[in-house]
Image (cartoon, rainbow, N blue to C red; front, side, top):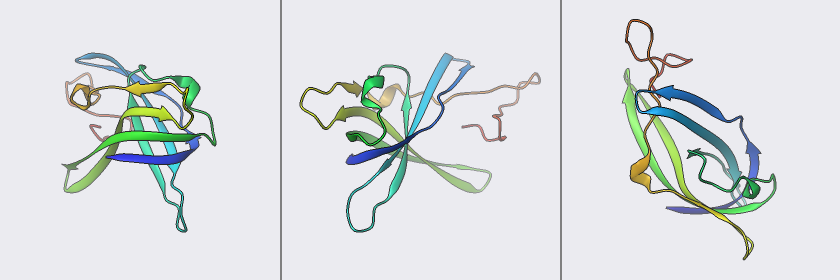
Amino acid sequence: MQLTAKLAAILPEQTGAGKNGAWKKQDIIVETDGQYPKKVCICLWGDKYDRNLLKIGSKLTISFDIESREFNGKWYTDVKGWKVEGDNAGGGSYSQEPASYAPPVFERDGGSVISNDDCPF
């Protein structure tokens, strides 16, 4: 899927380490155009994107995948961006194959999987 929208906010970068090694995640909030604009949080994994593209108010074209999963009877949905391009002709881009995403895994001393809010993702 693809979306062209204005960058509304850049959330703090999250980092950690799991069984597959270190990971980085950058969440951004974009706002669509139109009579009823919508805000969407998009996750960018890794550090292969051009940080110069992430300027509040800039127009971005983002290719993404949507994935939902169940945890303890509730469903959670992620919007994972795998290509980010600036609206200008000379803008850089971020491109990563969707299959390369590995969700972070956190472990307690006892070996059970947790995160800061007790969700495994």
